[in-house]
Amino acid sequence: MRLTLKIWRQKGAADKGGFVRYPVDRVDGEMSMLECLDVLNESLIEKGEEPIAFEHDCREGICGSCGFMIGGVAHGPMPATTVCQLTMRHFKDGQELVIEPWRAAAFPVIKDLIVDRRAFDRIIASGGYISVSTGNAPDGNAHPVGKEMADRAMDAAACIGCGACVAACPNASAALFTGAKIAHLNLLPQGKPEKDRRALRMVGQMNAEGFGNCTNIGECTAVCPKEIPLEVIAIMNRDYLRASVVRREELVAAIAPVSGWDVGGKS
Image (tube, rainbow, N blue to C red; front, side, top):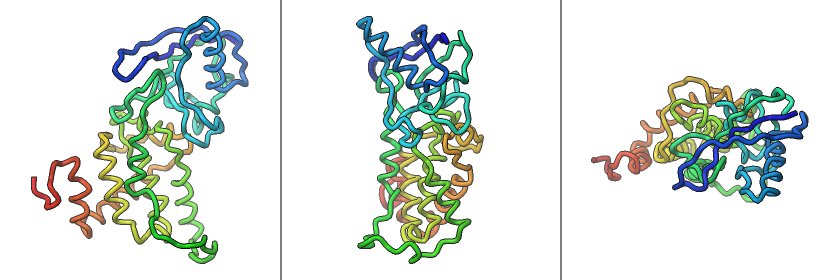
């Protein structure tokens, strides 16, 4: 099979980028998209040209490292599939594929198809954890959790932080990612003691990173490779609103970096 890849090339964050067309022969239908890029890079290296930079790690749809737009769709045309799992048999011989990085102000391009997603790391660092020391690992039955609640928490915890939700959202919102990270802890007994603080800090950090607001369009969950449900956004909003009432002082501290307020709440 032969394809033409129209790929975004950009040497660095400060450089102007543009699309370059590359014909790729010897494309096997069982190759993944990343393996197809490997074949292209081998040919570029043989010609003395610079290979295309893209992120990857496990190549098993687990780590969330890979990800870019294919034909305007995050991770490509197949639902619940990461770029590394997308096989070339889903494309036609002679087809041209437009490949570009995630587009969001909070995800600046580093090089070619690689973007800086450290904003996600900072959101996690602000509250996506349980800080209570429990000593040794507790017995699995020490905190009984109903199956329905456990399933909801597990569905949220499936998020791999790839960033496709941000790239697909017209507002470049990180609500699905942040909601998933809040929900999977707040739904469980172990996460209840820090529930309010977690919601305030993580939503505050999300806003500080410059992500857009959620308007419930649903593009985020449509392209999510783990099919995280929109429910997690509702959980995040509910927990944030509750916490903003019962912990007003912490709310002011959380939004101060964005609003310009001091800790007393005065502008």
